[in-house]
Length: 437
Image (cartoon, rainbow, N blue to C red; front, side, top):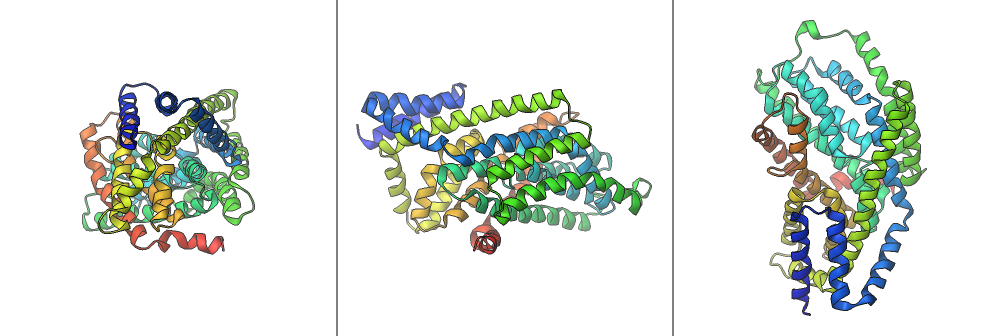
């Protein structure tokens, strides 16, 4: 079998399986094992099993279910509503302050939970009614939730960063530092856009009426509820950044901190704990099967000559490595419109990352650009997942076309931020160089 035919067969069957509605892990696993078994025989299965064992026998992977459990417990503690309430009490008197508070709350929430879906859904329920109540522009209100909520893809303890580190052999601790820096930069870009537009368009995002504002003492009292969640974030991320603990050890500490948050908010009950454990088991099982299946598919793709074909295509492109990078990023963002980001990380990243490093790009820098482009895909019309999360969670429901319209301005800001990181790599890498000398 020629390399071209083998690759076409693998990719063709994979696409058919994806659009058939069969669970993704089974599709990837079947294509990754059945086709090579028929073509190359049982010897391939032995190779795939060995590589799969090496993949799952990785201590860092234990952080995945622990970080998921931590995020679910923090979500059930009710801290998100308290966080937003404290944020808008401080920033409400500013024009655009509620939208900035939404971005700020999403940023903190991202540092607590490490996923995008929870932030978008929760802030749609908590923040959107407040902004619409005070006559905020609907595009700004929804756009701040879409953009801020997706920061959970990037800011540690991002589950995607942990998975990328495992499958591509990049330091998770260094990726956490770079992801935190990139997330803060993007949050500042979103907030600056909101404040500048609100300053020049006075009716766009009005300040809170005087009668709805509260005094300094009440603001301080309302912010007390943020102390414990903030301590959890500081301990988890601080221990990783300082080198005092590995991501796996820090994730265990985070679970204990999340349980304390639930206890303080009187949400530590059997139902919340049981639901969190069951959902953790469900999500961790899905990720585990995807990892196993992706190893088989990647092995088959390499055996069929696919990686050599991709390498030859990218390295022979006119213009050098930068057009090749552009092609890779466009390819990933298109994948992100149709596939779950977890699937993209475990399937595409181990194939593309070595090629990009071979072409001269820094492995850590490319890892962060890869994560940012996944975040961009998450809020890109027409199939960005955050768009559907917001549309489904809004009460009363909003039209999907209206959500699409709200996403475009923040999508441009997202691309602007990514271009800054591409042109000035040290804008996100300098803290890594500072902490990991």
